[in-house]
Image (cartoon, rainbow, N blue to C red; front, side, top):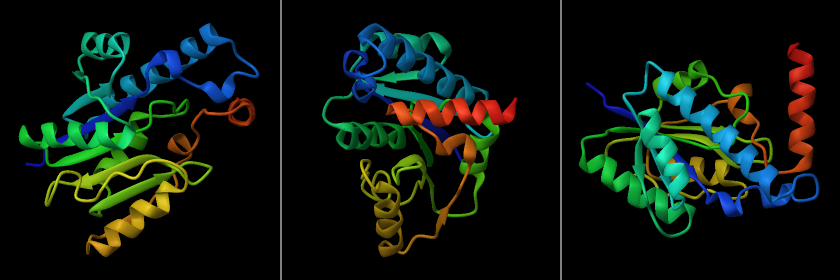
Length: 200
């Protein structure tokens, strides 16, 4: 039986959403980051294809929220990719053999979207963000932790796919509207407003 875990990395709240400074003060950015994280966490916990959820962060408040909700809190150091690598190693040592890494700022996320990623018929599944980043990444249990190196950052969707293909893994690029939009800039907020208006 495959043991699937969602892994959600969350930046320290004091540093969250800096690019939204032109439209939100520090308190507003913290409030938004927390609201987005809670939505992603709730969707992951509600997903029937996910057996457990882990949150990796250096922020004590974030880890406390994760544990209170029923997730595991992993207080990792280092940059995003280093923290994810360390967290993945710990989860795989506990028998986790399918990881679904989710961005913590997906306002339209649903449990169904996460299930589609977790159950997709491919070794490595990438859901790109609107700017070419990676908003969701599913990895197999074989090989070294993560099977491929984490390469989150600008244009990471194609880098993850390239690394997986070079490793001989089956890949799938999924376009899921609920996972494609993340919130980093004022224009992302505008896209969210437009999307919600269209859905109403």
